[in-house]
Image 1 (cartoon, rainbow, N blue to C red):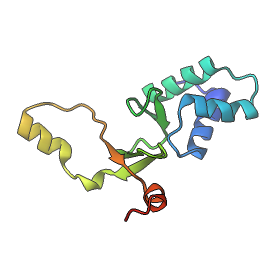
Image 2: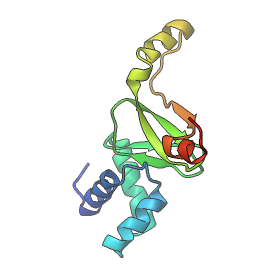
Image 3: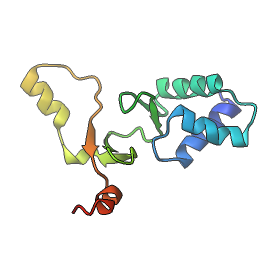
Length: 129
């Protein structure tokens, strides 16, 4: 992938916003820095970065895809209340791939595991422990 100043700016902005932002969220931030950037340019750069494995595109969390600069193996937790997305270490379920392949006979080439519930903040607001 060739160097692009806009792509570098997109990647830097994504790394500065570790909330697993959508393209629309990033676009609002980037427009303040570079009013000439278009949403189409942003999508093109995000998709190129994801295809190159530099970032991760997370589909299925909401109607819009989210983007994650963390490409290490990990899972996600989505708060049902505030909709924030949190990273969960893959160590919570060690060997899940090999165990699943052994049990099912499938050959797994990729996976996305997403947990849903309430984050610490939202649990505190609701008075839950």
